[in-house]
Image (cartoon, rainbow, N blue to C red):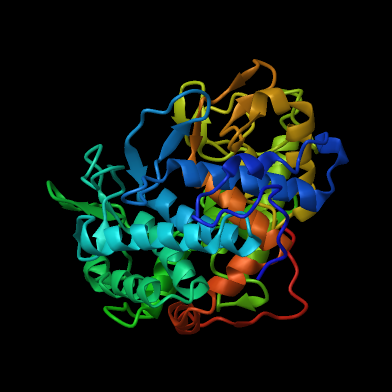
Length: 433
């Protein structure tokens, strides 16, 4: 059990959650908060998003939410639901909500996933209706988004010592036919649609798909062969004296797998992926600070961009090298998701945003998805996956609790074993270019 902080209210025997109290212990100026208190504030505000955006009868979490005023959206993201399930575990462990409230919400979600949400060979559509679970936006049956959901499912199975939760979680996971999505290999497909069958895109290069591959390797039913792990490409990129595996993609590809799988101190035949993410984050920080001439508000205490909302809609942007329509906006989850890799630097960024731009970039659900200090613009929607990566990585940076809990799953342990992970060399260093 994590160390809990008082909610500032009487206990709620009915299981109701006084979320207003999430903010009650933080009435001081952000400057008065210690680093740990700052992260506590960020996590608790972030959790409020997941509590508010999950449907009470399905447990499905919305893809994005308007933080000011009434939100009328009805599209759920199964990846966001996976982050939400993990967030419930953190919230219960920290005492932000009662055990009964958390367990009830998890049961509702797992029952819906097991018995009602449409699926294809155990894989779910990327976007579904918040209330009914019906396919939305003509989305694909998504391999990676199903995997993100399953990471939340397995986290719940380990955290809650509840027979129904554990049985439902196991049934949802074991139903997945990984071999179907693998086809004839050696790569897994991005997904499938009823109209066109399997998508042409495959997971053939380093990306956030490591968690997908490891789950498919470690499954007790329909697992795929170990060759799938060594088959995908690992391009080496060099920037600013750093050398690391990368694919010119946004920073989140170096974060998502690390939210659940603990890569610290281990390596496969190709890399130490935790240190690789450290190097990639260092390169991204350097890339951003070097753009200060173009965007004067950027610097050592204000950096970070990754896929997010923008003033023109959803943007896939990042670097190095420069990707997408970078316009000087800051995406807080870039630093939030980097907390385990560059703890002090990332906290410094989050503190800077909170102190200097709080009126613009802070809301009841934590940080804005993106904001532009020079234009006084902030995204009106909050994306649940971006808020989720900040919440989970903050917990890992503080205590390692999500790693510790998730890695107790035999599927996670088997997956890393079959991928060939072993203790990393003690003298491993980020190699120079």
